[in-house]
Picture 1 (spheres, helix red, strand yellow):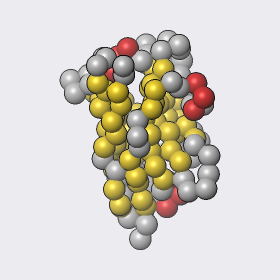
Picture 2 (tube, one colour):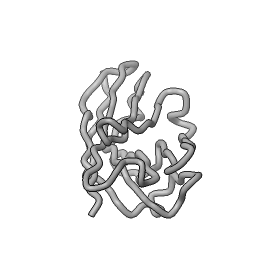
Picture 3 (cartoon, helix red, strand yellow):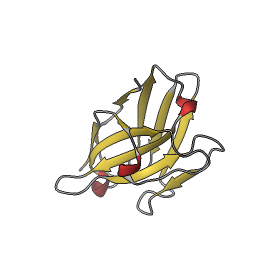
Picture 4 (cartoon, one colour):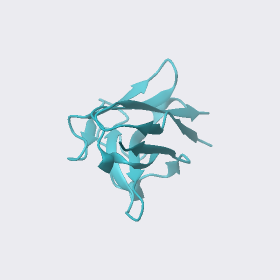
Length: 126
């Protein structure tokens, strides 16, 4: 069964950068459509970015567009999220997720994803 393990979270000050990684085990990172989701305290889980299985096509929420970059690292079999110019509102638990139904497009809806990691905490505060 597919396993996803996130890493790279931590505490940073506003304006700084972080790179999250999601290690994919037992399958190739190319075999799935993948996404990064986040959940702030007291709020619903939201899709920050996704990347399609083929293409690839990427999609970002308006709140992270231009600051975050999602990518696959085939050599390491990971899904990465480079986050620049971090803001306090980016604080939350970040999850990676995978699904195999879509091919050329990707969804940022959590209900479309079957496999989830345990999450990594990102805190942006001065």
